[in-house]
Length: 234
Image: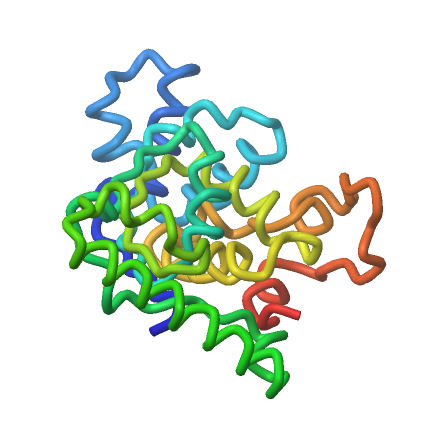
């Protein structure tokens, strides 16, 4: 099936919400007044850019985004849940049968005929063993121990805008693992549609600050966020 990402919900008018929260810190007006009338569209985006540059990102935490993620591997989900300032719900292998579950095949294997043959044979044997264990009365919570890390899973993920920027900084770097980078790119594409101000500048350090924070730079810095979105995983 491959990675599929949908934006299920987000804070209403997230750009304006964050801008109003930041203005509240320096204004005698009420939060409601600021959110409703103080900030017009023409002032929101440059104000958000000023906040980003100044590092006043606590206000970005007021905007949250919830995603449905389908078709990623358990390899990918194990990386994803390391981002702890987020909420996750994941399909259970304990209660959901995995006999017909898909398995994510890396491109390096898919494009190598002999490697693909080895991979498919191993997966088939694993799923056969899983089914045989079930037929012997072994509960799913124990039979799942033979399942491959590449098995597909489904998740719901909720992050606030500040954590998303941190997530994008780490996972959109060319040195990030290909599958989670692919996931991050799709998430960024979706949030930019509903919050173009908050995510006008988003991506690895070469995009956010113009500097690479990696110990071993790739030597191919991205130009801007559009450049990040335009490049498939390489």
